[in-house]
Image 1 (tube, helix red, strand yellow):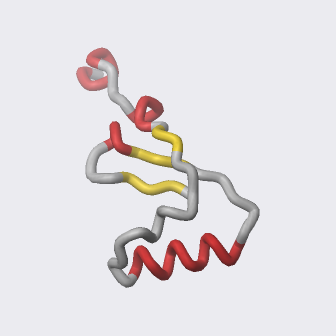
Image 2 (tube, rainbow, N blue to C red):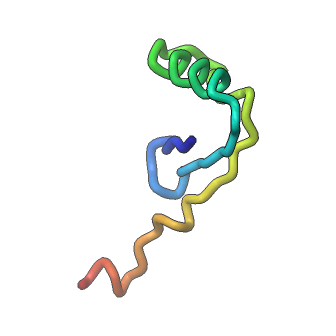
Image 3 (cartoon, one colour):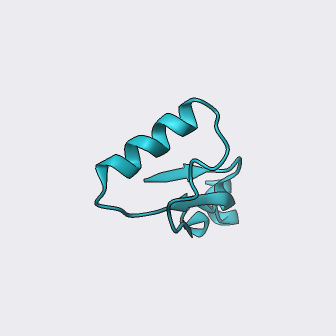
Length: 58
């Protein structure tokens, strides 16, 4: 599961085998509840989405 907190540098990923935890997280997110991501350990993968200067100019 992944989410982005506004900008590409704040892109997070977690892995789980629990469908129930994913369902609770999605429902919490959809309802706008605080703490929907607290049951997971998140890894920042924002570096994967950074655009280099060469890529930006084409």
